[in-house]
Amino acid sequence: MEVYENENDQVEAIKRFFAENGKALAVGVILGVGALVGWRYWTGHQAETARATSQTYQNTLAAISADKPESVTAAETFAAENKNVYGALASLELAQQFIELNEIDKAAAQLQQGLAAASDENLKAVITLRLARVQVQLKQADAALKSLDAVKGEGWAAIVADLRGEALLSKGDKQGARSAWEAGVNTKASPALSEMMQMKINNLSI
Image (tube, rainbow, N blue to C red; front, side, top):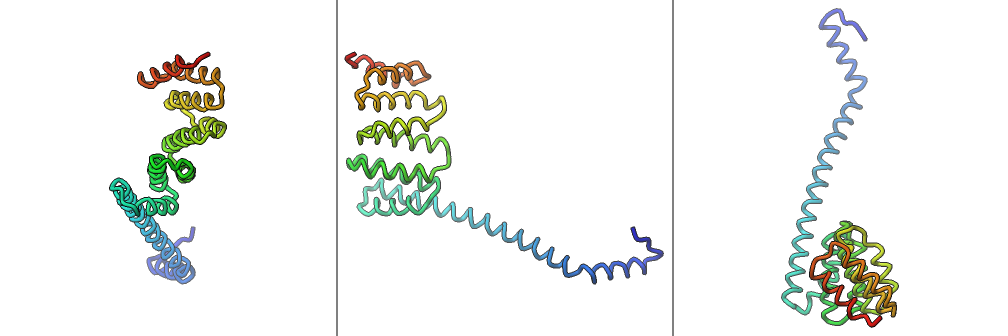
């Protein structure tokens, strides 16, 4: 450490320091301030974008609910352009609309798109279960079983078992369907779902 004999020496040392390092300090300060301003702008921009996307999603959903002819096209555009939770939810809503219109292929396509956009595990599970149900309707039992294999978690076990039974039955595998439904009855299924699976077991002619 340098030793100073008096205040004049200290002042001269400070002058030398800034003369030698002033540019670097100035650049550092500018970069630091710039980074802070940039971060605040980015987070503010992200928040504003999220608010705008949320509002657009709400407007799109309201238009679909009002059964406006142009709403489905607008919702398809929104879902395709937003690879996030709002796009996934829009795809889920569109799939329901297509199911009601008996356009099952379009429903499946929307669910695949929504699944790709979703990041939340619970939302992905909901979309995957809906997709498996649609795949059973399309006589794509193997694809449905593969979809069901991707759904993890005890909370989904009963619903997965029910759909697995439907997929296996559609393949003509009555014993497999029985086993799936029996496993579903033994899970923590709701009374209504458990009773429905038991009825399906009872209706099997094996």
